[in-house]
Length: 359
Image (tube, rainbow, N blue to C red; front, side, top):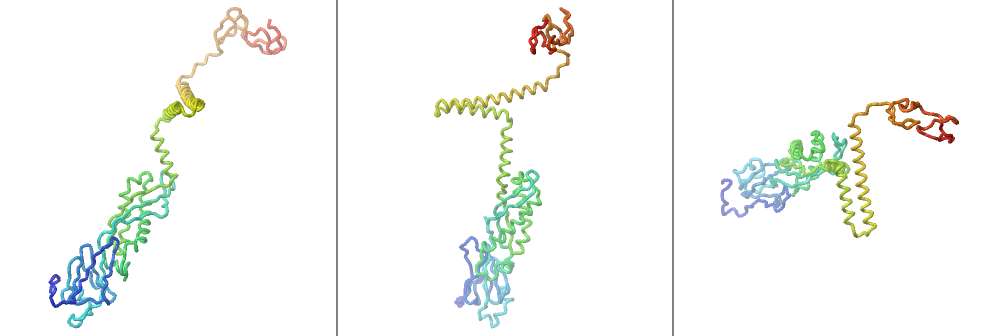
């Protein structure tokens, strides 16, 4: 008989061994064979995205891919490895059958339970949190049974997710440190980080009979204080000219005060006063800035000696630096009081100190 030959009418005790998965997370399922006995001629049906593993006397005898197989003498590879059928294949064999789901398990979550320390060129030491999704599939059913599931009757993704998640976080942290990407540039390198981490994880998954088909970094977040500093820096870049922005804020304050009629005259006056005060302050600041700018730009005046003035005696106008009056010839040196010798101010008729008349 061939593998796909029809059953003969006399084979009334033939069993059909198959598994229809009604879950989304089952990786392995042990077929419930009564007393672990499989009758001669039993039909094995393996669907796409499945593999059937026969275990005899504690050892994996064979693995079947998609198709229909008749488990009888001479046409199935498993029979050459099993020693239980010795009497013309009339007695049933005792064997366990495991169905392994080889489809991709998608939308599995990973994330850092604790912040990852990183040295950044802009912010120094920062703590990062990251999360994302990943997909995996069973690549080697033999290794899955040997390394993970064992003799469990049912093995689901939740049974291994904890270990895989911690392994991925460790590999991702290592990849993040090795990449030396600045915190401000992380968002533009999610794909590169995911690909790098996936490559580092493949050997670990392979040792468990698994394959990591996708590793996606959804988000890498900074601490709140660092994000606040970044927001401030962004705001300053948006504002641009701080002086014009302050003028705009003052104008808004005056407009809001003028529109606030619900608070009565006192409130309106206070609002307008605040607006004018802000405006005056800004105007003063700008005036000082312009004055300082013009002074710094203007060339220094040439020294011309004493300032121009009037004769201390006759009051005639005198050029700057003159020591004697050109009208009356009086010396322009500071005169002193004849009584108290106090220095007199130019043009004074009486001494400021004792009141003596200047002759």
